[in-house]
Amino acid sequence: MKKSAALFLMLIAVSISCKKSETDDNNPSGDGKNCKLLTASATINGFTSSSLLYYDDSGNLLYIKDVYSPGDTITDMQFKYTGNILQYSCSSGSADFSDTTFYFYDVDNKLESTVEHNRAGSFLMTTKTDYFYNTANQAVHTVSRATTDLVNFLVDSIFYSYTGKNVTSVIQFSRSGSGPWYSFTMNISYDNMKSYTKSMGMPPTTYFYWSENNITKIMYADSTDAMTTIDYSKYNESGYPTELTAINHMPQHDTITEILTYQCK
Image 1: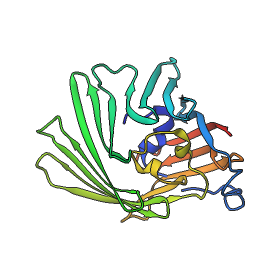
Image 2: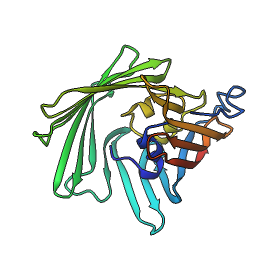
Image 3: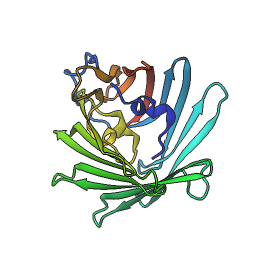
């Protein structure tokens, strides 16, 4: 799915070590309130953007508005439901269902597959992803196939391993066209506080949203160097992070700061 730029900037960069807040061990469960993320402001290299999230009365995410500066360019991501079941999400500027993700479910309303359309100029890329689960209903395997460009046919097969309710290992196998397969393994660490991704109401299509706690570090399994580290410097009384700094330790060494606000009840 095409993600909100401000909110997911440091997640898309994919690299995260965390210095714990003093409240981590003293109050991991918070005050018992449920929170919905309302705003996220991200700053990277002096450039600031903000995401505003809006929900219906049932707590379903209706749309995300991204505001960029300078220039105040505004884009929207909208979410369409049947009852409380998400049917598709799309960019407000999409035409003919480009930049749109459709969601398909089994008889128990568990996500079975997604079909994503993304347009770049006149070229429309379609990607289908299938989801497979263990007996605990945790997603343990996804297979994504880019079905439009048969010459550069893309396949990603990803396996997820859990420790408790957090995805702690990701093994990805990828192939383009008739070329060779390549693979890598990432190990992921977490704090013990409430995940802000869980408060967004986003569709659970990646390990960012399947895990119960906040990612603090991502690293390749065959390396001692972190790809990304995240320091959550403040949490609210309900146990959700309100300030964080993410550092991309890859060659560009980007540092991203985010301020998060919630409505808790």
